[in-house]
Image (cartoon, rainbow, N blue to C red; front, side, top):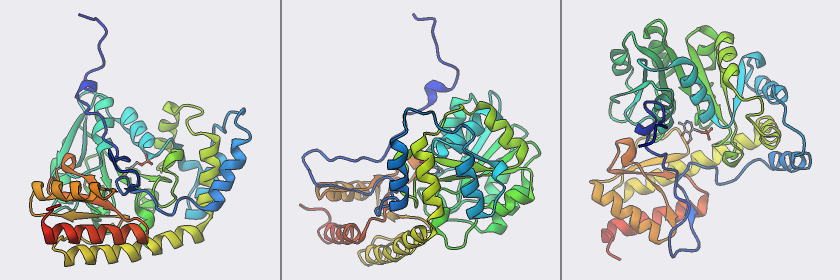
Length: 363
Ligand SMILES: Cc1ncc(COP(=O)(O)O)c(C=O)c1O
């Protein structure tokens, strides 16, 4: 028996299941499994990354000042209180590493994003899952779930994979009610899909127990670049920076993100296009007998009568090259999460789901 053993908690981590990108035997697939922007990144971001690629022999900036300044100017924030990471995943990991350890509890909701549990376990902390109310974050349940051991409370607003969100007043009530010593993390990965929503930035400004995380992977179309950021009280950002690797974000990612965040017209065009096809697809699915909650994101959580029906529909779509996401791992076995693709993709999904429902999957 080897004496070399991992830290407690690590072996409790189930490997993260990413969205599938291939179907055996189908050459032309449409990937609607990872909530990516079907329109891609802003051409200005792509150009900036190409230019950065010519200078790859140089290490990237360590303080990320150009990107932090661009984010701060765009959102009206304090650049000194922004931290950039290799995706918002890395910010989530920093938070757990710095603020939760053995004996501490990390709260998230029953349909919450998988990385909250993974990062809590990686830090040796105890993940605690709290009920939602009909696929919506339940502030009362979260407050009731808090104990003196609670160190971090994660909510995504809007949430993945439900697509629902709670009001600013509810978020403020949550922040107000947390025990002293617990930090609220507002994950705003999908915030840009909600017109005029600040993702909780004002709450971060007003309080000392709230941090916001954001990503360039969704509306900005830069999932492959791995870049996200966090915003919080100065003392907390200082703590996170102590564990951050000096070169945690590549020069290409920094350059792409800076150009992307400044290209507001592109972001707005993507938001409008997404809202248009999201509404259209939700209506089409409802007509076919597949309901969904009103989505505030770039995906729809389509609900089926049973797990077997959801799985049969997934197989039916897959055979037609349409890859969506099963979400049984998110305690939603009767649902499929469908990313809003471009017009062609949305029309193909609607037609396939209709065909499935009318024939109940008989090929
Ligand atoms: C709610 C939520 N938070 C965070 C992330 C992580 O995004 P990234 O690490 O690409 O910034 C995702 C990605 O799917 C997400 O859905």
